[in-house]
Image 1 (cartoon, one colour):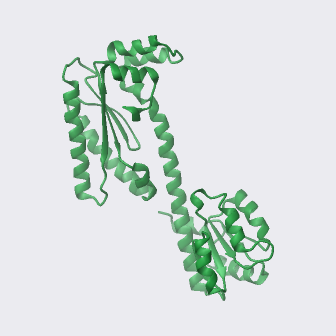
Image 2: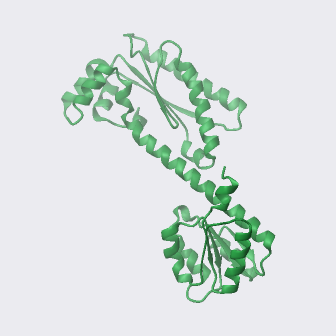
Image 3: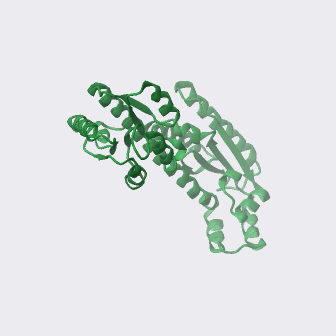
Length: 303
């Protein structure tokens, strides 16, 4: 969660063609401890200013010469992903409030200004905006980690095979696939990931998300400590393990299926004592088909 200092350091832009209104709002906000305040009387500069500074909150008057507040919001939509506008509109016209919200504004303050109302709405808007930015950063980190996880298949193989495959990384020929095929049949891969995890992550704070992943991963790791399952990697919501990488056995698939049911059971136990109801998707692969996928270097989500 954002701290009080984070909120007070939030970048604010005041846009109003009346100098008196700008000065009054600046005085209110600085008196409450906000220290990153910019202002402009020219509505045509808002797009450029926000492009450069990426404000956490824009206090925007609706009735201005040049571009009115509605036109400014329409222009800002090109800069904001998902059309989320960090805009708190300023209006003296009750009829404009619903129209402003429909145009993308997140909230409004009325003229003449009420100090308590202004400070409350500014704080609420900044807290939501900073939380959204934090969630977005976390989502982008998870996406980057998922790209890295495309290389995990090599790490799941016995070291001798992985090293030989790495030596042929630039070879796109049947020979590279045969190199994997000669020993890969002795390993069954077990891959698990949480269903609709991206949707879940967008609605959870960073601390909640990290706690959920840590608890689920710890439960899976407990199962991986049992004989027969070799935990290889856990990145984000992805979990990769191998059965039979250290011994030759004919029942890899059966043992892997049993472990898959254990993973489902572990998630059921997590759901039983938490308020989040998650589901896990399981993939198993072995033998020649797995060899072909390894040779073609497809992502883990194909397993």
